Image 1 (cartoon, rainbow, N blue to C red):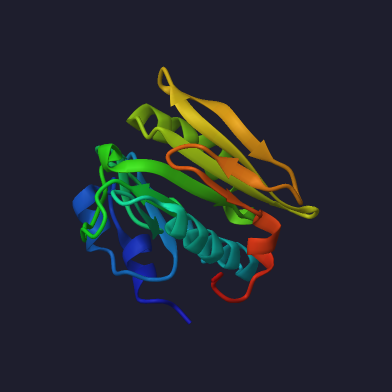
Image 2: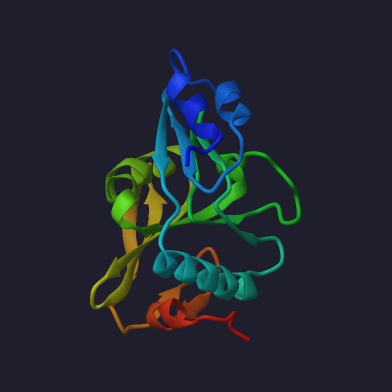
Length: 193
């Protein structure tokens, strides 16, 4: 069955503007704006979504006042460039925005899925760092279990500041102190207590 948004994506003429982008109907696909073109991804699978949801809970419980963890929100990394990270730690809790600016984002989290490998590893990190987003956490869903690499922006580029292998706990010191087991979160089917 054709979704209502598909004809709008196909029939669009010329480069996409932010106005065109925000006129799209909301649906389950992840549609991001990059220099007049759209990056379109299908909804991620259960393993990805389960880990994203569980990590959202874990980070949200650990976040100090003044920070909030949100799932899949619009982040404008530059004019005409709007990305949707899996998770975002924002510095303005409780506000309802259509798009967050880089100054309002303390960390972005991307969980690499089969449909997002190039974007999450090669395209998005330089855009996030050029925008000045200080922290980036990339999670890989490998066959041996999830692993992660944490980065901090230094001189406009991300530098690795931590990592975890499958079956190893991940520890972050910034933007706030938190420790979690990705394999445990990926296997959980209920929110942690």
